[in-house]
Image 1 (spheres, one colour):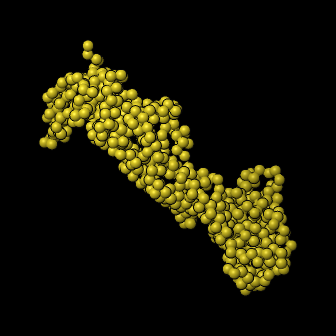
Image 2: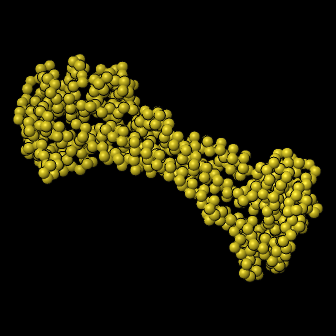
Length: 234
Length: 392
């Protein structure tokens, strides 16, 4: 039995620029992502995977086609609705984008505070727990400038996951990680997918991630050219 | 500080943490705001000193009304009026007493390290007690002796030794307008912007020092009312009685506030101080805007990240305003401390009534906050340029 869909895309098209400078990057895409899937999206540079990711993550306005995310029609949603949707998502950027003035645990707390509520110890505890889960137990108070590239990436992963998101969008999340740290992050992804039903869409060419994905979608020239469900190899 | 702000804001004090992260820039920004606050304090201090100094001689008189020449703007510049108006005034019911007041300028030369330019009042010694404060009235007997002068012991640049001599020693002779005069007592008013201080002489001595002045043409007539009468009714009756061109009848309070308004609003010195205060505020606005705007630009990528994960623009506005308030308060405190020290030093040097007041401090801190918040609101508009879609 299939799990319920969390993202449904129908006839999605997208272009940049106008007039002679107009360049279409997505052509009539159809895609459905289901609860608990760990999906890898790959493709050559310029294939449209980043544009698709930003559209599904409600970071861009849909120009043409239909996109349903977590039960909301994104193409008709206003900014407030799209912000509410994004609060149910986790984001991992290749460049980690940690705030340089905040310590590791403070950066992770930012992933929690937007959900509101009282300023209580559990925020701090939840942030500390998230850092512990990515193997940074002894780096809570470190500023980003005092962390290695891999450690920064793991802080970004902790920030994305600390709010227990329904959807996670990740761009090369393991590129800066060694085998052990990368394995730990992938363990976390798998656990989230299996135990919480979180859907993860990962843009990557890292074979370690592809091996553990439940589905691999390949884009070329703005079209899905391959979409296969597979059995993860742990 | 971080913990305190966290409790106050009920979130991570990201603005403060950002400012603290670049300590050199923070110190420079606070120094800039402190300088702007100091500029404003400086100008407001002089404006306040001008207002206070103008009011000092008025505060020493217990007269209720003052009759002056038409067009009189200050106590010193009153055109002469006929003495007859005093006699006419005394016939108005409700008026208990009236006395002429002569005003001139006297140079105190040769007895002080620095020569002093004094505003000298010539008054009838018999009228000192009902019309002037006790320290002036106490010199009435001495003023009855010809060519005797009472000196303002709070005059600017007055040597301590001369002050001591005037207060407690035998009379000290000096020459003014080719007459030998004797300093034989003191009182306290204080220096102003127009003169270094004040002096009192009898009306007879005044006319000897200024031979071109006439006993029939004083500068002002001071009037006291009978106990229990309605001042406004008597004022109206007096105006009706003296309904002749060239005479101005006011309450002393009105005369004082009129002169304060004239000095601070119409004369160049007041306008310059007021303009200086505005310039100080503008400097503060520009400094805070520049700092906050740079902060936003430097962190635009982090803000875009936070936008991506669901923070709204109002969150970033609150972060920028948090920084604006920190800069305003952080700059105000050292600015106020330095201003207090400068006030004290200038008051000692110039004899002007300069000093930090709660009203002024509150005005500057509120002004600094308003200016900083306005700058913050402008700077926060730049956050709108943070596009989370560009992060991937």
